[in-house]
Length: 289
Image (cartoon, rainbow, N blue to C red; front, side, top):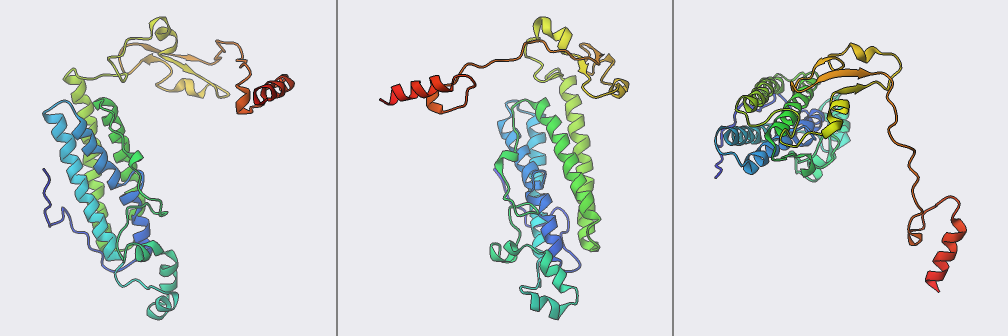
């Protein structure tokens, strides 16, 4: 059961209109790493979670919070669009720089949204449910959630440098702070999963080992670049993070199978197969007659 509280989690009020920045702010609303994505991702992960208790509550709590962030950003975008010029002439008449604001605005904000936010990114591409991942494996999902929060915080930090509006900056500061918490939260949740003995690396831990291939391929770094700079990395030697193997570096990867030679395809698909063109034509003709 959900309920809506009319008050916002944090103020979302600019000091003045800016239709061009409203367009940019759409990225952290309806972009791949925007608030619509993380809100739905965490909620779906929570709804699908088969483990009642703290993990399910964690997912649903933060998903609900992120839905509040969606409302904050929608409110900010709508307020940024207030008093925006609807024509080039109107823009120039009201402000010498109005032409630039008019040119930088998203016409869909006014044509489709009536002066309000839209479920799209900064390029106008509609938000897509395929951005959501809810695999049912909490360790896999929590690792992705760390990435989602990192990418989201990165974009908010970039947007912070694209506006001079104090009101907008203050809301962005709040979002940056919450993204800081959420990154740390998901990292802590990953460690908690391991401590509780529920999941561990590699994902999925419950899958049987790779038999006699595990030792040779499971922990070997293959160097395909010229030089051996990569050999200096933590990933090329020493114990693996999962504690189940030792990294080794192979600077001369070898092929383990011959070049594949595929048989001719079904002639009814009209693919090109070298050396059998005549046979294909005759086969097709015979089938057609």
